Length: 229
Image (tube, rainbow, N blue to C red):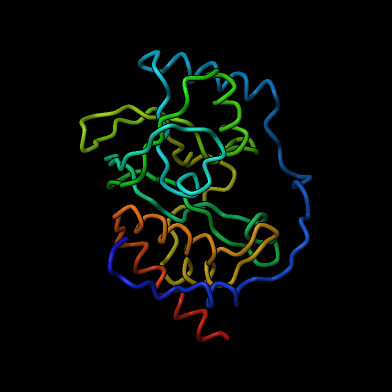
């Protein structure tokens, strides 16, 4: 853990919490079917460069909540992609009345995260579980992609989820002020957007990953929460 002290604290995050009832799936949205998931799994396996255990690149909540067994993790860097709050959200950590934003990897720049080595198990089962966690609507706003990573131990190929700019919820470029406003105010049945940001920055810092953009965001969100309460 670095010596930096976050402005966004558990106490400030707690101020954002509200009890929200899950509205359920959007009846107007088109959801991925079992056949859709099966096809994506087969296409992803076919594109895999080797037959060894799968590595997964975690840059957001997969870092602290992977929900899939892994045996090793290492800090890794991917070039050509960067973290961005570029996905509109009206459920989970937001509502239709007070929409929020979710993070993805969008084109450009670079991103440092954590590579997770999955157990040497059933690839199809592992990928099916991951895909159902990450993707629900069609066209999906996330898409699986094999990424070339740099680590302290050399190059690595890992599966990551990047943004699909043609996806249903892609928001595109949003001003910093709007991002801060939404992260400081939105909350859903899974919790608040501020809680997500807090956990993300905390878990990155614990692994000596300092994302300057996210560090600035957590400071601005903390100021916004303090001002509104």
